[in-house]
Image (cartoon, rainbow, N blue to C red; front, side):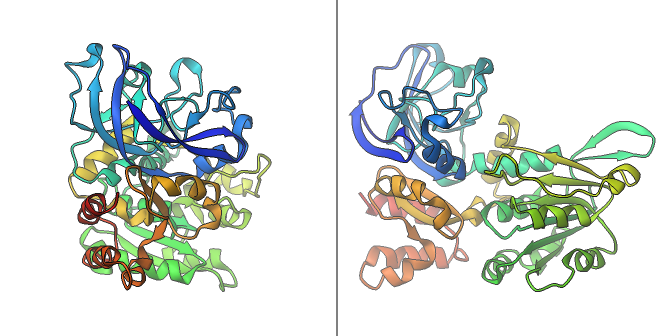
Length: 417
């Protein structure tokens, strides 16, 4: 079977090509990819090429398929898995394989396995590790977003607290406690807000900061006071740009320090503010991955010693986190769409990947079987003045509070080729 795929040949060398896939082996599965969301990690991979730890050194002659946040349909199942998986079933997967000590992952390491393509082959290690996941929801894009969503879920689970004199960690955010998400009005931060409000272990107070008022206004429109009150969470969106002493203002709002603080930007001032607002036994989660291997910031070690404050960091979620994301999505308890701001076709994936930090907004969602320039959801109405299809998309998303949705996805797949 032929596939069309965006392949990496080296640093900043991405090529959209059509080629023949080999016949699957008895322990492999052939899938059709429908959607893939582009991750900043994919940008880093594209920039580094062979210098990336997950990229094979022979990618210049054996290029790898890009993309790892994808979902689609099973097309053909090898004999070994015929009783376990079935053609026509929707799927997604956990890309963090860590198979037998290797760093190989889809989107970085495999010539026939990645998300920016029309069809690909799932190798046996994915099934062996339990990382090939059946998806029972309707919208493909929500399954694509399960992996980035699992990163926030994993961060929430990795937080921990202690009791004085007891050397045992109580895992997870403090239930009923005070929580802050700094630099949290971006796509991943909003995903975390959505999860925290609707998960089973909630804080009583949630404060989200940013310095971009436009992003904060968008966030306020997505999370109303009434909805949050109904879930038992007091939610505040705060612009700290012009505050003389933001840390003190945030502590006043909480009536003291915070139990859980998540830093969603690899910025020295953000991380140091996170340290400053911790309360006793406060857990600082450094969520955002820096590109500078020498990135550092000051930490109050007096509080570490006398107030039991502590720092953790997570990179990605595990398979259980992904399954939780899929289950919450299928049950309608969380909206992955809060992260999505742009839609495009496979023809736009390469340019989007190479320019990702320069493109404002949140998640960029690629549909691999269509041609479409990367387009901001907010621009649908304007484009609709000359293209009736965009006018219809604008109408659909407007009926869903400006969010991408199943109806929009179905209309897109039916009307773009």
